[in-house]
Image 1 (cartoon, rainbow, N blue to C red):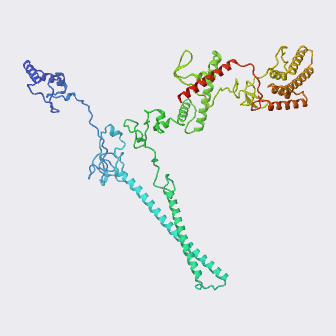
Image 2 (tube, helix red, strand yellow; image 1 turned 180 degrees about the horizontal axis):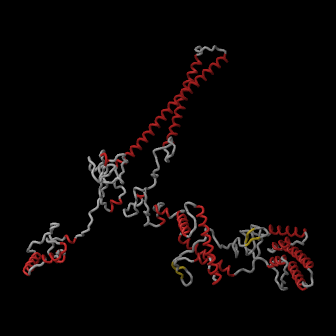
Image 3 (cartoon, rainbow, N blue to C red; image 1 turned 45 degrees about the horizontal axis):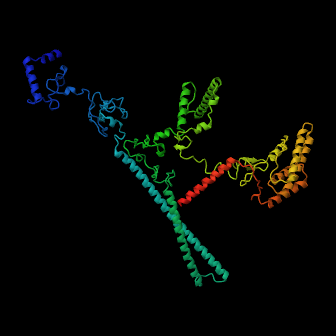
Length: 629
């Protein structure tokens, strides 16, 4: 057998093995010539071990070679060539057995023949035998299989270019013919217009001569002929000017037609500018010139990936790749609708998003609504079972008050690091207290006068100075509401500046109020009302006397009480108002806005201290500023 023959051939004696070992050592030492590979003709490295240089016994390799290390199933290098066109195989003159019975070619059978079926095939008459097809077995490589321009021939596209050039030339010819016809029509209209003008002038001249009693024969009146000539010349000039204007208008019209940037379907308005991209826009392949950026396909003119994906979102432009459009706008909703239609069809519903889009959309809306209702129902059940509704709605102060800003504070509350200054809430000053007021403007609303004012003094003038509210004003408001007035202490001191009559009036008021309190239980509502009216009248008279005598600041409050009294007579109220107005004009302590200023005896020590500190600080700043200047 082959194995026994190979073993027999590979047997060597001791002397031969010794000689072979000495030769191998000499080759490794460089004293003997190395072996030559029979396949490649190159030198074999003598330092290679024997298990590399020696071939397996079943290859029957007698001569030294390393070809047994090469792949036995190695494929040949591929090609990028394409099939040859217009090449014919062998031309037959006699029908060959096994060829196509219809055309006579030997490369296919009658079943695969693409020729016209003959009434009498080539097998029987032996005429008009077709040549064999030229069959190529191209072993295309990876690039050759995926090259979409492989096999493209410029000559094929040349025919398309010639066709477009013929169409464009025909369009130019028609345009020139139309322009020529238009020019001829314009000349005819101009001649007709000139003849019509000439006839009208002759008719007017004839009528003028008949009116003057002259002869109708022409040639006797030279002045008229000169006038007619001049009129003709002027008409000619006007005609030429009009024709120039018309030509300009036609040119402008043609310019508007031929320079349209949008291709139209009308042949008269169609231009050579077809659906091309706007030249002001940058081409996709010029957005990022990096060779490793997004791939641009020149045949489909598409760039699917984002060329600026290495930049931030705010630095990217409007174009973010063709695939970005698939996930933006209504495409996401359309995809969800399609997936819903597929799932519904799998579950037995007869719905199709393309054939019945309205039904599919309505079912999808119902499905989403039911899903939301089920989710909310499950949440309500969990809350009703386990509770915790108060934790579902967090306060807005906690949500918007949490930030990641790092701020360091000192022990006394000063900001050491982080937010060096407090952010301004608005461009207007806030929480600014002026005029000794303890509340800001607009903190109180008067429902009677429908005006805004200060809550500390109930004044509706923005520039008014703060005057504390007297206790009797509060007492009057309570009495009007029907509540029993609080008892005044007998030893209550009268305001400064009041005379003896005022003090006696206040004593009578206090005594009457005490009597009212003692017999409040036995009196009826009618008696209470009468007593209240009497008290208001006495208070109004006391205020009138005070305004006439000393003119103190309490005249404004007593006048207000007298005016608000519904039971006081008309004479007393008018006198009180006159006295109050006179006191405002005569008193030197009234403000510029008509408010009577009171002498405040009780001052807020805290506010006074703050005012003194602010004044000292202001003076210190002014002093330092003047020192620098």
